[in-house]
Length: 117
Image (cartoon, helix red, strand yellow):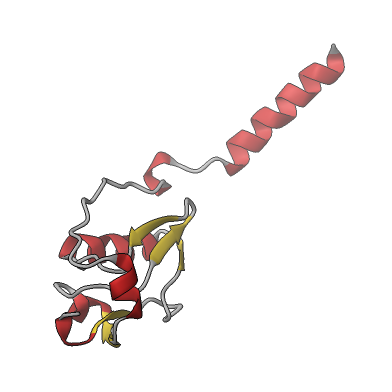
């Protein structure tokens, strides 16, 4: 019985020492994507790289995922909105590991060249 009590006490100490404050947690709302092209067409279309803020209103040609949880924020063929850009920048500040884009620092996004297929 003493072993179990010591284990419970140790786990409580670990939780107290390493638990994140609620203000540090990642807040997120679902952002409905605006799909302008099929993922395949956008992925294989001619693309150009733009600064992330300049990419607003353009069609994305690459995946952008935040890990964890690994769910795409952007997929090829989706319109890059201000809300999505704000979310990406917020996720970076919160320490989310961005995966998928050609630019590992995600300062630039690949978009369809000329804005069309």
